[in-house]
Image (tube, rainbow, N blue to C red; front, top):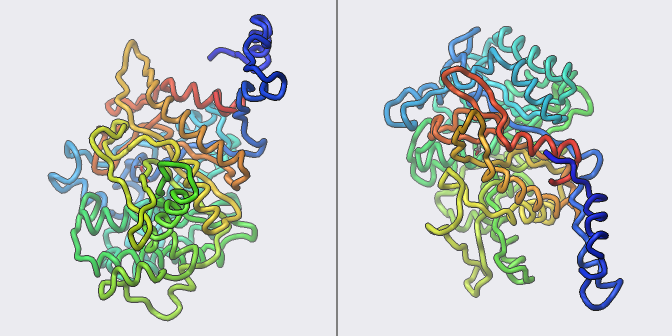
Length: 479
Ligand code: FCB
């Protein structure tokens, strides 16, 4: 990448006479032409994200227990092309090589998840020391390379031995026991833990639409109960991590809050969008941040509302040290005169999207998401725990010039920058993903990496987007 600095730009402008470029109105109006300063605060953290089942492989090694995703991916017709995570990126064996990719990018942080069933092959009970040893080695190697791990305790790979999975309330406690156990082992070196990844996916996609493991289509009351067990697991997890971790350990969640974007920036649409975000996430982030199910949700679900035991909501609302959100597709909304005051606008065929049809492009969601969670709940610290894009990535002469992914990332990060510039407490960004990997029900057909993975040889090749991200990190500024 060329080294064209803003000073060079100034010189170039000088050569053509800056004055001739100014609008009429002189010096005051000249400000209008100043390029926006898209640099980030000095302590802003740049990182990449991955998840255990999507990259590790080695599913039968060193005592790992089977998970819901092992079973699901081996069930014909569930995953595109019959792909499985059996080998994935083989990162269980190649993690050192992967850490060198991170180092070459210059990131200061890496978000990764632990495979619960490597630690407790049966989901609970007797721990497996080989699983703990593995993650000790991974964490040590990251730190030796100057990269700080941010660890997600659960990124969807549920131990298959847990009876009833997330339909069973006991799974929430089993999760907390496991999370506390691992916080006890790692918090001498790991300072940031996230309980679970994307509540909506491992509840709704798994138990309502059936697209994800275990592939169920349950009636509304039972789905609401699964959702309740999900937020309860998070809350119990927060408490268990705090009880076992070294003082100063920071605990949060990585949630894929559905964010509603006002199509027109006027007070009525802005207020409608914020209301929509709060109400449409009532069973997830709103419950966590407010420690209760709001009336609109209880009223709407009526007899299908979840069964809550005394004390649950206090646990669910356990205070967090930080909030992290995965931000991809926007939802559009407008104010209207219906009783709730807003109407959501569906995505249609002409809505622009990346290689995954669900990944509608709408960079404004990055700004509005950060602003809305800040205004609604005043989190002390915010992170973007995931943002990225799938692209077709044709290999040409050994190169992958993914200009479309760079376009997507540049637009989204510009929008995050606006949130930082306006003073919202966004402290870091994790790009999904370091490398192509097992994209759940899409198997290996959707590539999200900034490193290309040849799944036959396991060769990793930086795409153009990796070169671009490296430059952004080096300058701490959008390029
Ligand atoms: C998110 C998931 C992550 C990955 C990206 C593309 O929903 O958390 O594992 O699949 O989408």
